[in-house]
Length: 589
Image 1 (cartoon, rainbow, N blue to C red):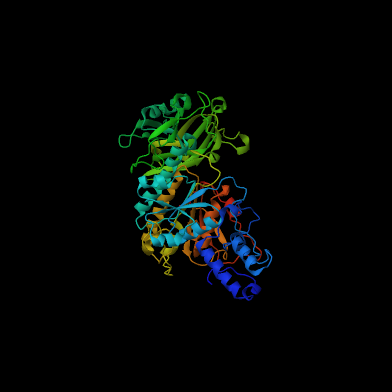
Image 2 (cartoon, rainbow, N blue to C red):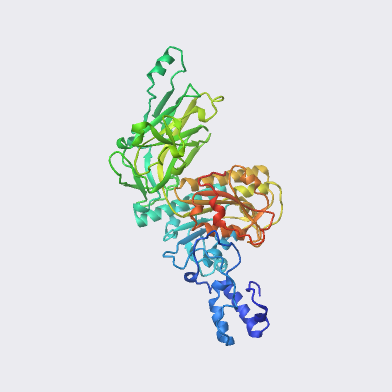
């Protein structure tokens, strides 16, 4: 029987009863009736864990083993099903089993992910637009069905009840529809969680929204204070002093940092604020959520005032970093954080970020990426104390021409700010996004190998499947570029949400068995170009499920492909160990 577990030869030839039991076992496997999540081993993967994609028969067929002992009169021995359980994801002693919402569960890859989640003991919910017979037959009765349309925010609020994590594998032949759906999913998750549990579960802390006059007025242009240099410049013996302005944007009501730095090697411009002079930050809380297509991910109706450590210092100890949204000019700018030590000896912490030439940039800056500087000069990490997130007294934004290309630029700069927020620290990914950027390169190469496109949530035909890297025929280079840009936009939506994420960008997917070829994780600008060939859907599903409880996957974006070589004899493909070498907050698009 198809799908029957591989058993010892003596079992198959014992009697007709044994053959009937094999058919029974296969049927129970297909329906999932014997899956008992509470009895599964749900521990996180360790360096000694061997990754397999086969079904752990010994852990899901205890009822069959007991039935066989009663029918045959043989003792209830484990020798009959002597297969090691190597696929566990969580431990039996786990106090809380998370509920995972899978968006796009009816697609080929989504269906495999759902089955693996059930086998690992997760509580699984799926988002569907209709409870058709075909949908029920594909997904079975082991999941919770949530009705909703990812493009309709209001229908998602009920679907997010009790949801702890989201796996987004949906695709659409309309890139704008897919992006809107992803935005709505993430926004509904945050709003429902905060509305249910209060401000303590808010994902982001709003530090500054520059459309508010009080927030805008708290920032001021910072003078270099070098009177000697200014006099030399007036006498024509030195480069002119930088000119900078902090003003209101008429188009967006944003705060605009604009000006010119004439000394492109040693000059700089800076706008700063002190938290003692600024309004109290606000935890984002939905109050009564409403659908607003113009709102960004996580934008809310009401704010809840946050607590501060004292009148001058801000406690950001529970947060992981800073998110800022602005419209720039394609140049590199610097975010600066200051503690009380800045007033004593000029010590501050800086983090560079790149803006886009057109459109808004959302920069996600983890606190771990800020480096110490004193009086504008970089310090070794061991020469300065670690950034004290619990005692922030101020922040600044700076433009240093030397950090761009001083030989080409004229020192002009423009950066329009919409908001600055802090995002909360989590131990595990809250959202896993299956991106299609890497697959577009391979499909553009003209590989016309026929693969079935999935019936993903919102997908239609091979074009939609290929857009999400889920199979399809070769496409033109222009179409591939459009798909890469669409994937890049969706990845930026995930990064800017404030949620802890894991973004996996598989090569073109195939339907081969998993656990056979060696997995390859890569990052960097060249990662997609080198991700040739294909990768098994089963292996991608394995990586997705493993990542949900792995701290090493937090805020990681990587490309996943498979080597042309088989693993060496006795080699253990430890996904957790592979993720350990991946750098968080590393853009690959």
